[in-house]
Every structure is written in structure tokens, then in C-alpha cells.
Length: 357
Image (cartoon, rainbow, N blue to C red; front, side, top):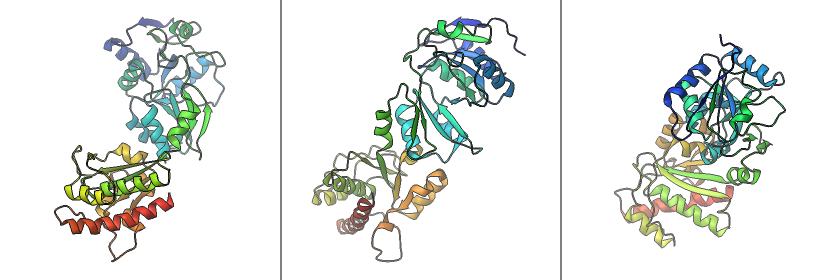
């Protein structure tokens, strides 16, 4: 049991923190204690989210209204899928843009309730969370209703006898609380505007991402990306839609095939500077529409990232079927004429996709 003796206070260098001190703080959190730690926004009180006694004590210390939940703090984006379900593409876009950083995202939790999650942009906070090995909550280090502390002196003044350990790294970088955005509703709703403005959030969430996927990202997906970009540019819609392509099997950074460059040149599209991109989990999670060339691509993506299944389509579904096959075969190693036939099918499908968007 932790006593109510005055907290042990340690001052450390934010840029070169002592690992032993961070481990000591993390162990106290894991065992159910309360630790004041810095973040880039304000100072917070870290506690073990799975320890009922720690949470009850934290609520009492902060004089927090009964039933008001605490947000979780994580040290990596990958942990989000262990916490939440039905995560929308827009939430992944916000994480990609603003994490680590001053944005708390409310998502649907595994148990059906909602949960707020943030990844702070502070190496001390991130390391303590990682070393603790537990889920961590970290509300601001103040009595509820009072201003959140932007330096250590403000954080400790009312809490010196109420926490077990406290880390002083000086003033916080931003001095403003995180923005809180609810991603469980459509459109998303800003519940508290803090360090990230609503306009910045809107700029990220309103932009659709269309992702074309093939095997090597050197021909079919390159054609599709170039065609859709041209179509959207003609419609003056490129500011609202981002078009990307990637390959399942490419190591990345290779060029388009000579045949693809020639076929696209005839269409007035220059892909000579294209560099292949390897398909990643992040790309799939952020994409609003994922359009693949073959059923094998569809199957591999479904297996690897099942949560994107409702945004995953075969590109040929949008073209007029000339046979009973929904695959667009890989033209690699075939003649320029074969490339032309592949291009014709892709253009037909892409034109239909542009109409739908």
C-alpha cells in the first residue's frame, strides 16, 4: 500500500532523462501508485487504468465528478487496436497527422462503451507508459475545476501529499490542453478545442484517400492512380481527394515499367518519376476506398487487416465485364499491346469510380 507521505520529487532533463528514474516511476504506476509526469500540453497524474483502487484514489485526489471517465495514454499507435473497435479511417488520418501530439480521440471501446485515447509528444511520458507495461490514464495534475498546470510548481502545489512520485522537467512545451474529438459520431465532433484547432482537424478528416493496390506498384496501380488524378484535376477536385497507390510485394522506391510509362504518355500523363510504395497497415487504415486488381490482393488484405473489409473493392467491379473474371491480370512480361488492353479496362473502371466519388 502507498502511504500519503509527501511525494518524492525528482528533477530530470527532458532531453536526456535518467532511465533508472523513469523505471522507478513506471513501477510505481504499475503497482497502483500515482505519479505526476510531464506531457507536452500540461502536467498529468499517471495511474494504472486496470487497478480499481488506483482509479478510485485518482478520482478522490482530483475531486473528480463521479462517473467521469479518464482517457488512456499510449506510447504507440499500434496499441489502438487493442483498445478500440470499429475505428474509422478518419481517426487513423488524425493519428497519422497529430500523434504523438496534443489530440485526444474518443473511440468505440472493445466493451461497447467509449474511450478517449492520446499519444503524448513527450519522451518522459512515453517512456514511463512503455516501461509500466500497463494501460495508463493521465488526467491533468490539478483539482477538478482549477486551471491545468503548465509547469511543475503548479502541478505539485495542491498534490504534494496526495501522490507517490513526481517528475519535474520544467515548463511544458505547449501549455495548452489537448483537443478532444469524438470519432464515434459522423461527422466527428470537437468536444474541447485545445492545442489543435478545429480547422486543422477538418482539413485532415474531410479529405478522402483513394488507394489503388497491385503486386509491385509498377504498372496497374500506377495507371489507375495517374488516371484518377487526371480525372479529378479536370473536375477541380484534387483538393478534396488524395489518390495513392502501393504494392503488396514491392520493396519500394522502384520505377514504373517502360510499357506503363509509354502507355500513360499517350494519355498525356507523365509517370516517369513514379517510385513504388510498399503497402502498409497505416495506408490501409487511413484509406476511405481501397481498390485492388486481383482477388488474391483482396484476400491478403482481408487477412492482414480485417477491419478495412467494408472499404475494400476489386477495381474491375466498376468496369463492364467482358468475361466472368473480376481480376485485372498483371501485364508484366507481356507486349505493349497487352498493356494497352489492361489500360483500357483500368480506365473504364477509374472513370466509374470518379463518378461515384
